[in-house]
Structure formats: structure tokens, C-alpha cells
Image (tube, rainbow, N blue to C red):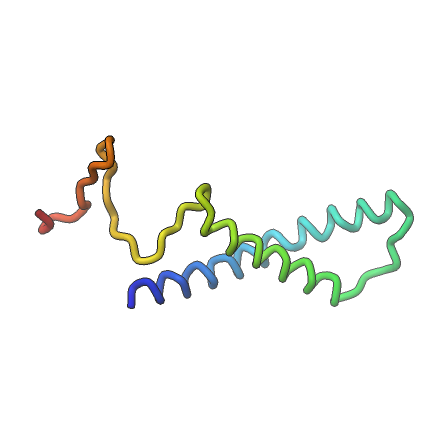
Length: 92
């Protein structure tokens, strides 16, 4: 059950971050198109397309080695050589 909640959290977090990153990516894309003289004007469809691409990219990145978001993992302190210690007061 915690895995499902964590997956839902990752999707919601990526959607919110996508809302923040989309204007930046879209602005850079428009500058790139204007430099090539291919910009045809503002269209909401293109903004939503960039939002979908950014959000899906963030979700995919969160499951890569560099994102390192294992679903349902417990908090542990790495001690080295594959050893870990749980981070809780009542854990053995």
C-alpha cells in the first residue's frame, strides 16, 4: 500500500514540477524557433504538448539510477559494503 501511495506522490510531484518547468522549456523552444524563423504564433496546444513531455520525462527520470526513487523503500542509512541501518527509534 505504501508503494502505491509513493507512486501517486511521484506522479503528483512530477506534474507540479512540470507546471514550473514548462514555461522555461517552452520559452527556450520559442526562441529556438524564432532564430530559425519557423515560429507561427502562440498556440495552447504546443504549451500542453511541452507540459506532457516535461512531466513524463520527470516521471521516467525519477525511476532511473540518478533519480533513485525506489517505491516503498524504508529510510536507511548506508554504512558501506551493502550494510544498512534503519532510521527509527524502535527498529532493531
